[in-house]
Length: 83
Image (cartoon, rainbow, N blue to C red; front, side, top):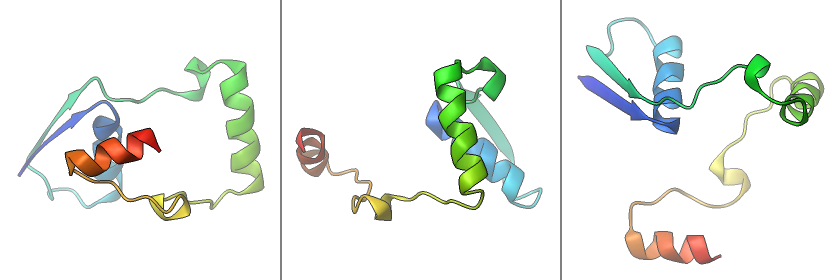
């Protein structure tokens, strides 16, 4: 099993690598992973992030909160973009 992660997919793949047991994947290629540390963020980006992590340390966000599900249907994706 080989994994290829581009941009946000790279960040998701890195998270999966950290979370899952070793050996579940044979090789990984990351193309411009969307990963940066808080020290690289501007103050207006860090402050709300720090506030949220202090107020709700266990907060988990999902697409269920917006009642939208990801899709690979081009017609449906176009309707969602226009919404």
